[in-house]
Amino acid sequence: MATDFRSLIPTLSYRNQAFIGGKYVPAASGETFDCVSPIDGRVLTKVAACDLEDVNRAVAAARAVFEKGSWSACHPGKRKKVMLKFAELMQKHKDELALLETLDMGKPISTSAGGDIPGSIQAIQWYAEAADKVYDEIAPYRPDSVSLITREPIGVVAAVVPWNYPLLMTSWKLGPALATGNSVIIKPAEQSPLTALRIAELAMEAGLPEGVLQVLPGFGETAGQALGRHMDVDMIAFTGSTQVGKYFLRYAGESNMKHVSLETGGKSPNIVFADAGDLNHIAKTSADGVFFNAGQSCNAPTRILVQDTIKDEFIALIAKHAKPWAPSDPLDPNTTMGAVVDADQMNRVLGYIESGRSEGATVTAGGSQVRKDTGGAYIEPTVFSDVKNDMKIAQEEIFGPVVVAVTFRDEAEAVRLANDSIYGLQANLWTRDVSRAHKVARQLKAGTVVVNNVWGSDITNPFGGYKQSGIGRDKSLHAMDKYCQVKNTYIQL
Ligand code: NAP
Ligand code: MG
Image (tube, rainbow, N blue to C red; front, side, top):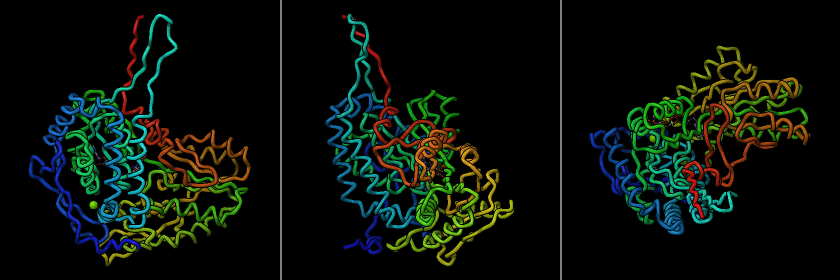
């Protein structure tokens, strides 16, 4: 029987304090902030607003356990066991986690229960299993010596994460960082702290030593910056905007040159050649890719590049397939698009829509705020045509349910426009011509290229960007490298 999520709401109790040294504690200052649900503008709870002193305490606890070695130097098989148990406990509480995610950031319950939470559990599980399956190396060095190349955990890792996939982004960091033996401090986005706070106690219950996982809710400028500038944090694993990613590079440069891995913004091109085939299918898949999660996906295919000979037909089809994404109550299991994360984000997106209009683009579908009477933050699925690639709406990441369509004449122009962006996270292209597919894919400057689809994501595959979409890769075994130092030991025989 399908879970009745609404009936679970009264049973929820929110973890709203920081999690430091294995315990929930108030912020040292006693300060809190309101955790607001974008579904109806209601305050769900007041959450600890962590700052420098809390960061200092969390880093000290993380460092202490790291040096003690109870996690960093334990048998990898033990890490596997504890993490598998952790995943099992997340599974046991999956409905609660899904509901927390939906209440906290407004995505449909079908998405959190069907995507975010299972994906998060899978990430923890996958890296748990990898913990005792990745081998070190011996170099082909001189016969009178042995040269060992070994990986060691980096130390204290601070994961600073966004609100669009709160627990999933957390788990993409947590999985490989824990599997390789690090101590981790999570700083969730101020809009979405609830799931990260809840899983901290599940990790303890699974047997993670105190101090190995801590969660510091709070603001970017205070808690986030304090982590970025801390002299005893060894690494920042960041997902968020390009602008804040650059701040972390600066913080590292002005402090201890900590490692910084960045998964940042995107404005992914979606190239549709005239030879692509079934335009109705392509338009539907493309619209689904844009409007899923209310457009709040870093790799959403939000910049359609369509060949001029099919543009009218294709844009009409996109507008048609935008319609089923009309926003509705996130707690209704049939809802496809919920609220955007908060009123600020809604106003930012509406500002972009206004800018598109004033730059001369045409609103072919949507364009307005809806469901105002709910008190929540809802925007119609919006399609812009007559867009030039140098317009603001084609260059900047809108991060809402808005897609723009630009036309091109030939393959060379398609590639040039696709790469005419500061971002390089993902690029999609549609063609039936196999050599064109390979040729164009090679020329696209993006960490992920998807041919004849817009969906291409799995924990087994690396994910990250070229250019200002980031530095480093999440997911897959590649992600484990970035949480490790590589040590070379020579032994003279
Ligand atoms: P954001 O504003 O950059 O925030 C991300 C995190 O950084 C939050 O925890 C935030 O805290 C913190 N932060 C903000 N200002 C800070 C500062 N001055 N110093 C230190 N930390 C600071 O991003 P967002 O709006 O939450 O998320 C949307 C962005 O994430 C989009 O750009 C999207 O493309 C990107 N994203 C990228 C990927 C990827 O894998 N490439 C995946 C998902 C999302 P506060 O909550 O207090 O602001
Ligand atoms: Mg919230």
